[in-house]
Length: 157
Image 1 (tube, rainbow, N blue to C red):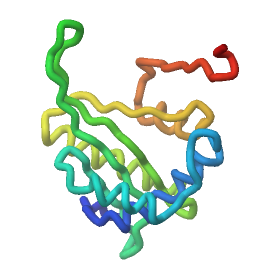
Image 2: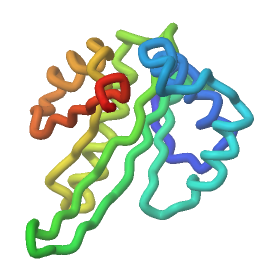
Image 3: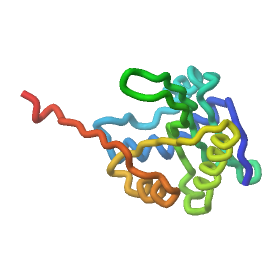
Image 4: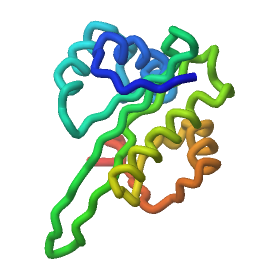
């Protein structure tokens, strides 16, 4: 396995399919079905943003997964201290490569990036119905810090 930082929005759009399909399957009222052209256009717009990082895992020459993370710097406010952290936007591993260590390998590369840039905090979120993600993140050492809840429109008059 090897990891490469990429700015190939076509490749990222292709690798996005499993995670987009999962989100649509779990929350069809919130997530669109995977549409390569729409996803590709989105990634084309953001791929060169210096704060967005895309790492792809290859097995031999085959791309098998990616992790998209953002480096964020927030200034101090009256309410909170300044912070510099990584926020993981998405992780996607091809179905035929799951449980082969690809995700862990990708996360380790993000940890190296954090260490190399003196970043002490990494955050992410996952959807409640995505039990597998919850288990993986817990195993990797992520701790629950904040919960967000919603009141759906059928309860609002």
